[in-house]
Every structure is written in structure tokens, then in C-alpha cells.
Length: 403
Image 1: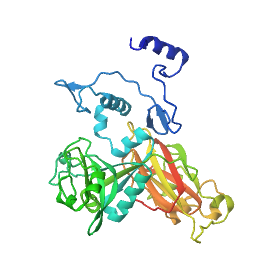
Image 2 (image 1 turned 90 degrees about the vertical axis):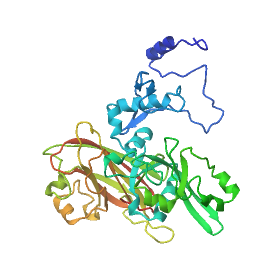
Image 3 (image 1 turned 120 degrees about the horizontal axis):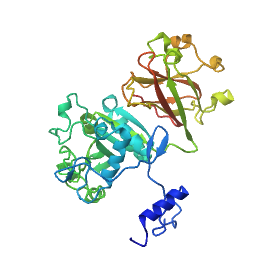
Image 4 (image 1 turned 30 degrees about the horizontal axis):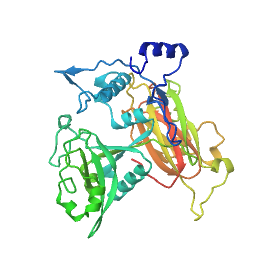
């Protein structure tokens, strides 16, 4: 026994009381009121839960098969990976996962996948700096059409189909002006970008020693910088996971439901039965409560940023192509409990998640004026059954970004 503590006795006591263990031999330091002590669960579909595993790990020739640290006795990452593999249905299931799904499962946030080719470098710069200010998690990758290219290192030193962390952005001052740089990290800790503004590039000679030191350049540690323009042209997608969405100026609405054959599984927007899909009303701002359109101090109409996510919750048994649409409800139809076929035939959505996708989740973002809206989740074909989960983040703002 270390520190006079017997594991089996403590475990039995916790089970008898139904409490989680708190270590009296290593109490929490409460001297700083800003520090919050929390237990680290995982998240899926609106619930945090604990995952129980043993400490047996898969090895080959004495080495861990999957996640491992440079230090052979450091095993926390491999144990965490095993817990996640259990949740997902096995280690093989992790090979087919996505960055967005993983970020959401570990943080409970909402992850958006943004196509870099659809945005200017200025727009991408604003996305990254804003996400950094919100302390959002970010990652990116280069999409490949041929699966055999995954893992191949290209002429720029970048690994195709590989997830990179996006650590932030920085404007660097030169004699000729300023350049905008994006900081990335290869989780491997090696194999770095070798283009302009990489660790060994000559561009750094035009930056002052003070600024260079502040950027903490280290050779071959997995971290590197690149021009925002090059980032947009070399990478395909950036995934931004918003984790801090609760504040006095914003809220999160959670909705759950099920598509049932012959009842409310109306299929995609191209079908006449689309209107039979589940319909959820969403009030944005105060217009629906006061009956007036509020204006800002400058006289422009108030706008709210809405981020909507649709998840299918039984992915292991049903791989549906899903989509979600958001419509503005005219004042004359607000009192109706459901909107009919005629409304959806005449109306276009104010935003949607795009073509139905065979993925666990789809998202859309829009800048909306106050009023009443209706959310319509759907599958591609009619009469496809499955459970779904919707989250809607709504906060004051003027940002408008859809993909």
C-alpha cells in the first residue's frame, strides 16, 4: 500500500456508498477560485458518460499497435484510445471515423467542416482568428481521391489524408509590410512542411530576432508555420469545433426525434412527401415575442448567428443519407402547428446542410433576423427509419458562413 491506502478497500467503500472516489491523500487545491476541478468523461448525443476498460493493450513485437508515446512507459493516450474504441465498436471503427466526430465526442462541442476552396484567404484568416479567440479546437487535412494516397508525403512535406492540428494565427511584421501566417502541428511530432515560412526557410531572416523568439521556432518538433494563402491552396478542409457556447448572449436548444415509416419519414426536399418530416419551431431573437423587428443603434436590422447540427444516433445499424433545412415562418402562419405541402413547395430554405450526406452529422450556419423559423430534418429517401438528435446554437452576431 502506498500512503496507507488500500485500493480494494477504497473501491468497496465507494461502491457501497454509490460515490466516486476523491483522494484525501491528494486533496484538490482550492486556493485559486478560478480553477474548477472536473472529471473527464467522454460525450455522445447530449450525454456525458464514463467508459470502463481494463488495461490490456494490443501490441506487436513488444510495441503498441496503435497510439503510443515516445516514452514507452507513458500509456495514458493508449488507454484513452481503448476507451474510445470501445464506445465506437472496436479499433477498426476508429479507422473510418472523422475529425469532426472525434472532436465532438471528446469535447461535447459542435464541429463544422469548412471547405477551404470555397473561401478566400481573408475569410479563412477571419475564421481562424475568431475561432482562436473563442478557444475553439481546430484541425485540417488534405483530401485524396485515391485511398492508396493516404499517408503519402508530398513534395511540400505534407502527409496526405492526415489530420493536422491548427494551433492559431499570427500577423508577422516585415520591412515591406505584414504577412498572415497559420500555425499547424503534425501529431506525429515529425515530418514537417518544407515550403515558404517553414522552420528552415529563408523568409524568417526578414523577421526581427525578438519576434522570431516570440514565435518559438523549433526544428523538427511537428510544429510549423505557413502563409494563409498557401494554407488555403494546399489543404482541403478545416474543422472548427466550438466548445464554449453557453453565455448570457447565446443559448443551445436540443431536440430529439425519430423518422418512422409511413408516419414522418418523408424523405428529401425533392419529394412531395417532404412536408411530413418532423417539424420543430425555433424562435430567434425577440421578434416572435414582441411582434416587432428590433433595430441596432446604427439603424440596421438586428441579426443572430445560428449554428445547427443534425446527428443520426444509431449509426452502427443505419447509415442514412441525412440533411436538415431551416425555413422562415411568415407571420400569418406562426399560429399553425404544422406547415403543409404548399408552404414547402412555394418556399425556399434560408439555410440548409447541403445535399444529403452519409455521415453521422451535418451542420449549417447562417446569420438570421429575429423571427420564427421551422427546422426540418430529413433522409434522402422516404420511409427510412432512424433516430436523430439536433443541436441549435444561437447567439448575437453578424457572421454568415455556409458550406
